[in-house]
Amino acid sequence: MVTTARAVRRAARLGRRAAYRGPASVEVYNDLVVGKYSWVPNDEHPGPAAAEMENLPVHWLTDWTLCLDVECGMRDEGVLHRLYGTVTSYEPGTGRVGFSPTGGHPAILVPVHRIVALTGDRRRRGHRQAPAHEPCEG
Image 1 (cartoon, helix red, strand yellow):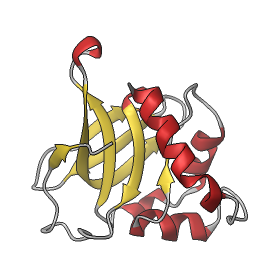
Image 2: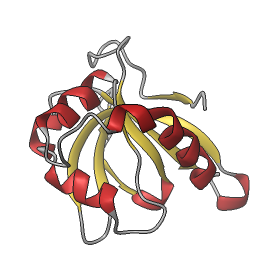
Image 3: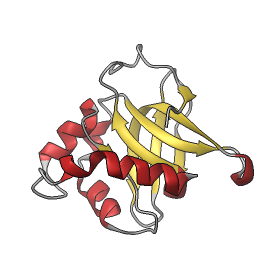
Image 4: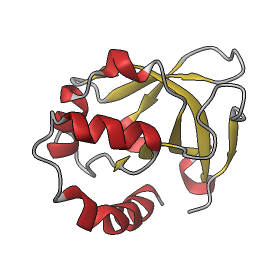
């Protein structure tokens, strides 16, 4: 389910990605937080997406409400959900993303193999505008 959803997200962003100058580009960060760009993890860890996340100023991401599309539940019964909150850390060695959901929920570590994509939400950018989670729309 995750690899299929990732493939769809990668295809949707293909043309936009060519405009960036490199993985550490401030343009990537700016477009990510406003929802113009989605970070999609590699199907095999590590890879170019892992390097890209390492180069993003993760400490700046704590200022923005982002969407984390993830697989929830048991593998054979999993569903995709969109979590809203802030990225608090990225562990390149393990490939886990620290995420603090909106609404005062405790921070969690999300394994990359469960993540479909990370992006901003143009409609709901503030902490009070976004729910903690909702079903993922694809």
